[in-house]
Image (tube, rainbow, N blue to C red; front, side, top):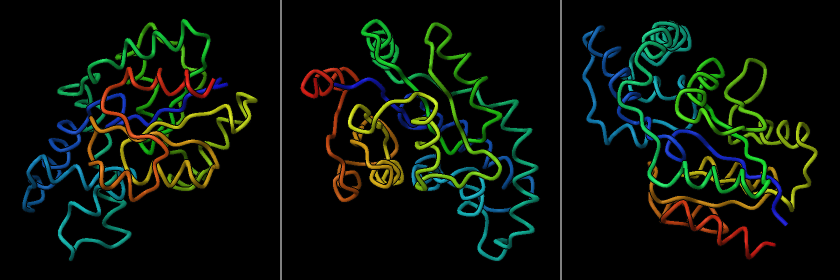
Length: 219
């Protein structure tokens, strides 16, 4: 029986791509670097802001010191613009409400900076009570390291067979594999079916409501 569903954020419950692209392109433009089309950011995101910046800036700029400086420059701008174009994916609110009505716990595990996590969930999901919302925290390795999932399992006291992990990238599938929990790939996010299949997704769904069918089967 499924008692807990852990969701990735970007590309899974929130379409954040345009804001991430716009904010990164603003950073690039301010330094006279070439900008990238929005679709290119589908493959830049997924491993946290530092990795996003590293992938976006020119190769000659990719030193730890410069990435740190660009990271510190990016964060306050993103904080001001993180809700400009971001939206909830169709069907996600209904899914979360259904899970809540069934008494199934929900949590979020993201590589987005922790400081942005609660403001985003409060803004876009005011009526959803997440058990916990965790992002990228100092001293905790980012996904695909399973630490974030292990922390959620400790907080909730749920056993691994009672958990589904839902995400849109190979990073998410690897995270769930390392954590030893069932992994569900979604096709409405930033990556495609082939990536999710190659990453070993146990299930792949095209619409949020299909997750309820998986939960029913598991029960």
